[in-house]
Image 1 (cartoon, helix red, strand yellow):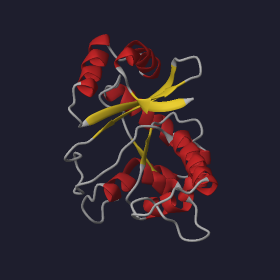
Image 2 (tube, rainbow, N blue to C red):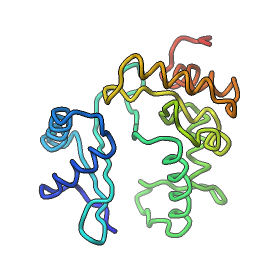
Image 3 (spheres, rainbow, N blue to C red):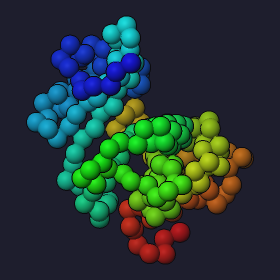
Length: 206
């Protein structure tokens, strides 16, 4: 497998993957967003995973913006995913760093203290309120993800503007509130306090 930048001949495969990921997204929205990524003049980029048969097996769309609504920080990194993608990244990044720490003569890359893993580094970012992962109400393995990464790592997100409205968002919130295997404290953190902390809303919000 190979990971590389999107190329013009990838368009149909990219659209196929987008349709699978967002089945309720209209063709007009797909076209508009894909055009935005391909004509962004450096502010956006798409990277794809190429399988051995030449077809795409995955993609990630990234963009650089000068602000994030509600955030007072000038630099915010955000990658849409979910709790299990986050746990997979923790494990894979830690194993990759252990297997082959890159040469870093200019000191530009991550350098961990002896005995620390990338997972330790990411968990520290979570505890400091600098990183949080958006989740939806129906995430089947959220309780396990909380056990591994802690409730501070997650906050509810509506996935707007994709295939959502006020009724579907309310349904997602109800589903999360009904999860018996997740504590009331964790639910409160995911639905309210983690977002307030991350976006630096008024002190004492609870």
